[in-house]
Image (cartoon, rainbow, N blue to C red; front, side, top):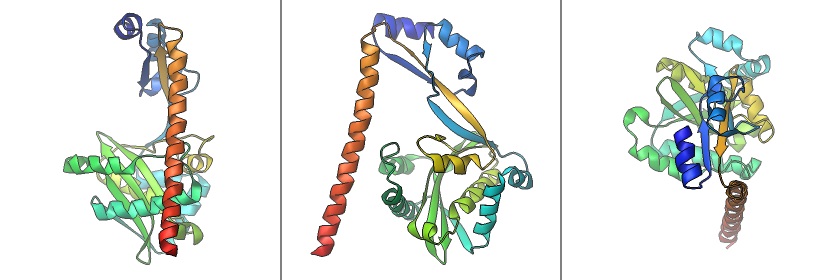
Length: 270
């Protein structure tokens, strides 16, 4: 850490940011946190990233008991809706997820905070070895896809990348998202994984999704960010520029989607 500061902050005058994916770095009374401060870094007041980690090594019976009561009731409702779940790693499965995600984006409009480039993820998929490929989990009602999740896994941890529920799933109160997550836990356990990272927890920006994830009985984990910059002008300027770039990207994405909708509506009318 001291070498990073000397070379990049002091010698080159750059803005250095270290995002530490070690849960023990965030609390101020831990050795990891103290090491950053001793090296001259400043800790950010808020965690850089929050997620929920589930220990899925216990039995399925125990994991089900650990679900919060409302989550467990909704899972029972989903199991009574004659839903089916299938898995795949190919373009056809990905296409199903993308169609459902488009429906979700049209319904929720999360672009301000969450607007991933899905196509880049699938470009990665083509280059991954078979044992590291992302899995698409699709939930169907009477043969029609109503919800889908995208998972990846390596080491001892599975990770929930994306999820989407289509209009039919919401309109008919199918509770498909609950059945999908339970199926993901079962699949990861069968593959020998011990942890499930639900990837992302933010009650202020995404209250509904955060409440859904917290109902699964995992632990909320905070990840810390540390910064150092010897130039007092550069640091604040970079932070502002990054904020402005994020807003600009969101605006461009929003305008593009509006234009695509208008173009589609014009073509349909003609």
